[in-house]
Structure formats: C-alpha cells, structure tokens
Length: 595
Image (cartoon, rainbow, N blue to C red; front, side, top):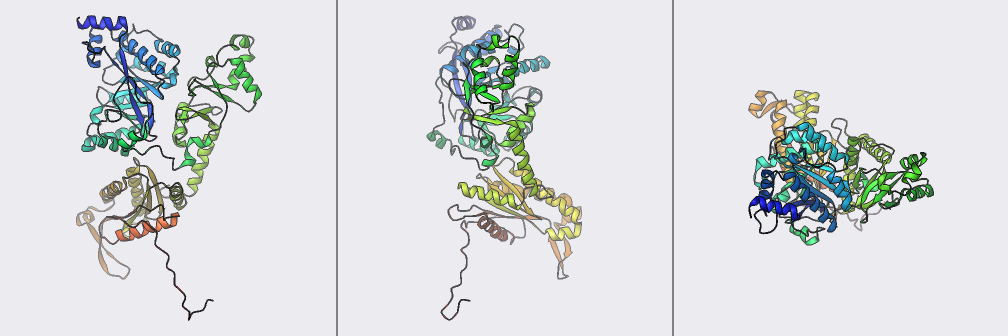
C-alpha cells in the first residue's frame, strides 16, 4: 500500500492510536495533566507521528486527521478516568482552514462528558501563520468555550514572543532544545531565567518539555519552573500513571508534597465548606436547595468524580424563574444549562497574591465566589470579597513593619518567618548580610548616596532571590537577612556578592574605582586607605531540634556575620555550628550568700 492509501485507511477505519504523557507540577509533586500524542497503526508506513502528519498535510487531509486524533484523545482520556487536564495539539493551519468544521470540539466534550475547563489547546509555534487576526479570533472562541490555551515548542519557530504577547496563553511549553543539558549551558540557563521573568509578568505557567536527566529537572526546579514533562518522568503510553508514587518521587529526587510555610497566605484557609450539586441536577431541584438555605449564594456543580464543572448562582437562577416562561422552560433542564461554565478554579495551596492576580486579570464580579479544589476534587468555595479583604489586611500589616527606605519586611516579619519554620520543623538557612566600609562611604559621598547604595543592595538581594523559595527582610541600616527554604543558599549568596560589587562601582569616582578605594580620616584622626564597598555574609543552617526560637537562630547568624567581617574583602562565612550557644551560668560557692 502507498502512503496515501495507508492514510485513507487510517481515516476510514479510525485506526489512530493515542498515547498519553504525564505533565507534573513540581512544587505540588502531583500530576497536572497529560499531553495526548497520536500515532499511526503499529508497523505501518505512517506509524511515526512526524511522518503521519507530514503526509496528511501533503495530501490535504490534515484537518480531517486532527479531528480524528482529537476525538480519540478525548474518548480515551475519559475512558481511562485520567486526573487533571488534557493537553491537545492543534495546528494553527488547521484552525484557520475554512473547511475545518466549527463547534466540533464542544460537541466532542459534550459527547464524552469532559468539562471544557479541563482541556488545554496546544498551539504549536513552529507553523508560520499569515493571518494573525483570524488566529486571535479563533483562540478567543476557544477561550469563550472555557478551554485553556498553551503555546507549544516556544523558541523553536517563527515568532514565539510575538505570539505569546498576542495570544496571552495560560501555559507556554519550552522547546526541548533549551532544556537539553541546560545544566551545562550558561546561555540556556539565562534564556530560561528570562522566560521565567516574562511568565511572572504575564501570569503564564511554564512547562519544560523533553526532560531526560535528573540534572535538568534539578535545575529547572531551582529556577522556579513549575511544570515538567519528559522521558525521565514517564514515557508516553496507552495506560499512563495516575499519581506520583513515593518511589518515583525518590527516583526524581523530589521530596513529596510539603505543607506551605506561609499557611496564612494560601487560599485554602479562606475556603468555606458548602454543599455542591452534580451535573444531572435539575434546575428546580437546585432552586429548592437555595430556598432551604437562604445564606447560599452559589453552588458548585460537580462531575461524577467530584471535580468541579461550573458554578450556579442564586441570583441568575432566580431571575430566570421569575420570567413568565422561565420556570416552564428550565425547571426540568440540567443546571449545566444555566451555570457559569468558566468559573475561577484554584488549588487550596495556591498563594493569595497569585489568586488575586487571576481575579483582577479576568475582572470577576466581586459578589461571586471562586471554587477551591484539593487534588483536583471539590474542596469548598471562597468569596471574592473575603479574599481581597484578607489580602488588603495582610499588606497593611506588613507595611506597618516594613523598612521605609526599601519597603522590605522589617524585624517583626523576619522573626515571624523564622518562627513559622521552627514550628513546622521545616529545614531552612539564614543569611545575615552586612555592608563593609559603609560609614566612611557615607561620610565622603553623603547620606543621599548612602541611601542609594542601601537600596541597590536591597534590589540585588531581591533579584537574586526571586527564583528561590525564601524570604528577604531588612533589619535596618545596611543590615539584611534572607531565609532560604531550598538548597541554593550558598550559590545565591555568591551571586549577591558578585552583582553588588559590580553595580556599586557606579557610586564611586573613576579615580577611586581605579585605585580600588580612597583615603579617609578615621575616628582617631589618622589617615587610612578604605577599600570600595564589599559585603560580609554569615550563613547558618540551624538545627531544628535544638533551636526553639527566632532569637537563637538570629544569634547564630550574627556570630557567623562577625566571622565574615574579619576579612577585608567580600566574604561568605558558612557556619558549621548549628546549635545555640549554651547560656553561661556562674555557680555560687559556699562562701557566697544569696541576696
């Protein structure tokens, strides 16, 4: 059989095979979803996907093939009861094909009973699109249906960043070129850091594809990339894993899902347990539920697995029933007809500031609720008004204790951060950062330059710590403390020293920079040579068994900083002592009396 005949047979007999590859959430140590990948019949000329889709394009059958693949992917995903989201590849060329049938995706979702908010459309970045406006219109249509959007193979095609800015995707999937041996390439590492910064600014989640080595996974985790996919995690298969077991977490060097340090700042704490209804519930039955409890403003609508599909609002249902024919038209219909099909759904461990960003980005009605899930299952509802109120109160509280020069959290917040980790017995490191020769600089160049240098140091610390878990605080003056939750404290401290020494030279005259310092008079009236500004950093990793409060931990860091100050140049002193100093007790002899 020729390739064209094999393709015709595949389309006619619907013999496409679908395999699924898990995409994991690194931070939560669980499966985010699965990418559906299509193959031709085993042993055929078109078994390999690249050959299959190339030939379909050549023979003018790409749209027909993609629809078949989409149908089979949704059907198999539902049949296997796979958790999380389904990622489906769609070519822009197909989307813009005038012969491509409209509304087919929604028909398939309704046919197989899959919620639209669980589907992610992957638009590949490798195909050149001439009609950008039509593509935007098509993507907007998918969004209106409740589907999420991802850009696939970012960095491999024609205009990735332009497409990113125009499509505003929910996910970007990095081309595997930038992941392959990224731990051994400075250029690739810097590219990844740039992408992360863009993702933060646009509220986009990043997925690193093609991970085949533990070193690659470790690097992307340390950089703050949230999601990963690749052979190291699991190869594509017809029956993929539905959860990350402990032995696989160990193999990947992942420690399992941890409780959030800043538990007061996660959305789960504001969730309220409220009753929910299933999708088969009729509108008149839902109306009775609302009438029985006047406090209910919304009801979550769930599928058979306890996963949210939408949100039914009391006022909307009441308004429909109040119409002359509303009761007759909708009483026996499913609540799916009237529910909000695109509610905001968040995980219980999502940070409040992230949720707040989603609320403001999508302009949700402040009177509404959002759905909170736990491991993809319905957990409760959180009122938008309460969320925004709590965030405002938190910001006011932190602002009261913030340093007025840098606006970084002050002593109260620093102590709270340390105490939280001690209570939760969560391992951490503490760095005490201090400027050297600051008084002489301040005397020579003036207090305004001194303030600018302190703000520069604050900016450098925050920037270098941005991709690491932890907390940055400003004690006062030229003293800072950083709490590190990861294992990257040493590397970050070295980068802080390097960046500060480089950037702080801008505050000196060229002559002083060339000389490496300047002459100044000390307190005794003697002339002495003062080097350029340097940093002393004391780094400790307290023993949680013996350190019971923040004062003991701070004392360890202070002692380490004093050791670092003994060196003339910038120095990072890593203290091996992990236990607090034993208090000195003087024993009273028999000759002494107790007063």
